[in-house]
Image (cartoon, rainbow, N blue to C red):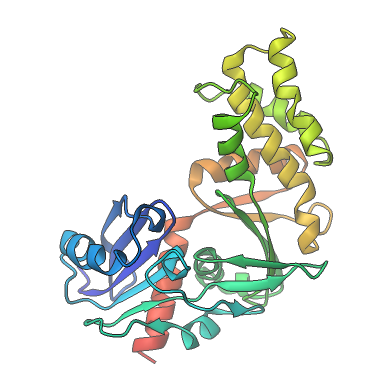
Length: 305
């Protein structure tokens, strides 16, 4: 078994994931903690990390490298965004070392981009997964690649020669959650229903006039065309379908260009279903594996090179 090398941390809004990483890059141990930055009081992050995370993984003396919302204005310390285009070497050159932390503890900066219309966009955490995925195989660092990271705030990323060139965020996951909890669409908890999901994909059309298309979820129920227990998967299909229909064009996707999906495997599977329904090939890649590759590469650049 490889000796422990460092503590890798993906610290998000609602959850924290941490792994003890060996010198060969493999995760020797890993845990999830309900310590997302939105659940912590201001200034609480250092104490919870020292008293909860490190002891749970027996990593009290390991250097730590963290990415995600821990570097936001809600997290441990706000770390400035790095402008695109950016690669792993650029991220490594801009790591934020936290003063007073022993062993060394560092936060990866997020990325900032300009959309085609000049409006800004930002990401924190996804950049490590995308660049970790690109680092996984030499061919991914050549040419142009289209990557999607599904989630609460889905990212559509253009990777050029191994760099994040630009990206666009779609608030699909958050919109789905808000509609399920607070709208008049009569959304109930329900099991997976691929047929209802596919009906939602079809209802999404070209992704335009989304506000009008969303009301069909209510109209189908009150009009007697759909039982209420099918609304949730139907709504999921409609929102994801609208996203995959309209958003890739905002990062210059060519017609039929294949997409690499990185993240939660179940959610990536839904996006692949939506893409394939439109005749677009999609591959699925585990987000945890990608973030570990990315953090290991950053650690080696900082501590080994």
